[in-house]
Length: 503
Image (cartoon, rainbow, N blue to C red; front, side, top):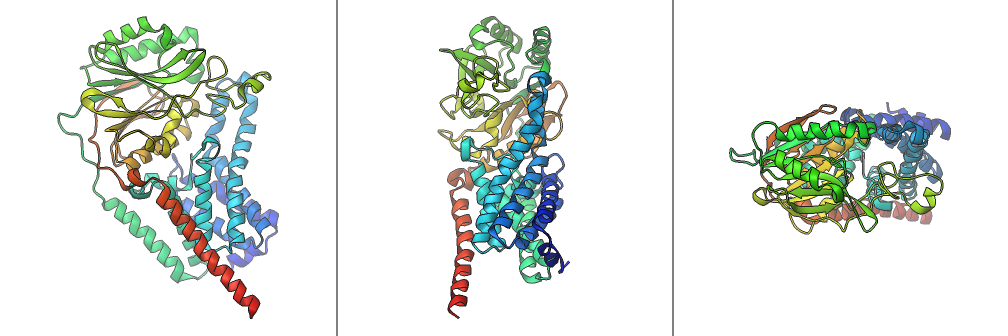
């Protein structure tokens, strides 16, 4: 193994890029549902080795591009699923979407490795700059922080540390652990052993942290309704009535809960025309408040919304989704693109949905206050942190039928767990095709309906956790530390170069 660095350094740029691509693909297997996180650590160690072998800025950029392309091609392979719902209309886009999103996001890694090489390289610089590139990926052009490397820790006790720093330190820790393994493989035991020791200590420490408080005997009971509607049948006039009746049957079953939650876009008609349907739902709910995913129109605009009906069937609250999916719920340059027949995948009317005003809290009566999230919004820590106050729980409704049945729904669920830990709040999660789940304030799933099954689940609402450090500070401390970790070694590198030049 000590000769591996020399062997990589002797490879041509093309061969090095191929190796990085393969390692990137392997690294993605730590993401849900595979959760092979030790394999991710080893693969990122290999990617660090490829970076050290890339002695020029240009080679480092190409190696980063290749590694990122392999990583995102596997981690985001579910991205083809929305295009296969209507194959005749969108199927031709599927391979282009996977290639474009993989290479597009890999550009962040390419830029990061180029900058890291220009700053002198080294494990701290590489890890810090690459983590900063992932932070940028989560913000730029509305952001897409899905499948960050640190998400591989969600299936481990390391998840608990996100209460202190969010997702970015998890990515930093994964990368620095990979670099430590590479150092050990090259015989640099001292620096490598320290990094591995810290990681092992944090894993053990996370496992020793106390769990979230369990629901009490008198905790409110929430019913999660999962109709399991295939996306290609969701708006079929011949099938909509069948699936609506299924949701009604689940609503009417058993004892009356304290809250009933239907998933995103659960109503088969616009809210503006749903008075009769809502009256039926209220009657079927037998006095229980109901949360519904609806679509509504206002002044020629369409909204993807969450509606709360009180026990009498009256509208108690209405929330409009504000963080929309580009190319899904709206089309950038929509009027221009519509001339070519290209419209968002999820839109049903006009040129897409309009964005709501932003995060808000909903008074849920005896249950407390909820922060509503609709599907994509659960991916963004800043959408949760942007609430006007601290909620008692998170309320997420989603239609994960768009993500298929392989990796996408499980990755979306994993990120929901991360949001709960970051804020110290339980989450009610109702999904059309699954996974519907009740998640406690420590990110543990206490009850769920499996993916691809129709049914309902009555489960107690876990208690609210204490405010976390991350809920108070957000990502700012992590970002400042990352800049420091990148700048300090880079400054030392420049001073060494200057001394060498003078000598």
